[in-house]
Length: 115
Ligand SMILES: [Zn+2]
Image: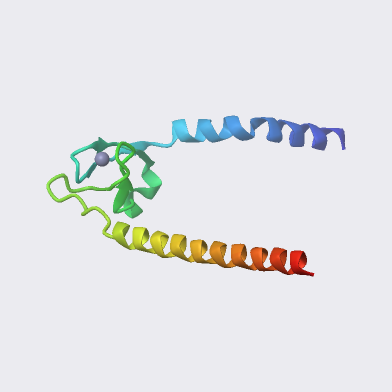
């Protein structure tokens, strides 16, 4: 009984330490990614994931996707204007909503004053 609780306690204590020990003992590889702006980023991967390395990596400098091929970095995403348009529509819609609400409130105020 007492022995069991000791093992449990040491396991909890070794949790975070065990993780870093595993990371240090497992062989790691450094992979270089290049973004369209020429930034190089070299994240580390454990050898276990070597066969399923991500094809792209977000550049920590500019946020563009970076690729394994230095001469052919992935093109910057083209969904930005789309997002802006959506945001614009959203903005307009909320403006209209706000106006409607304001008019409703004014009407209620006028009705209250009138009576
Ligand atoms: Zn970059």
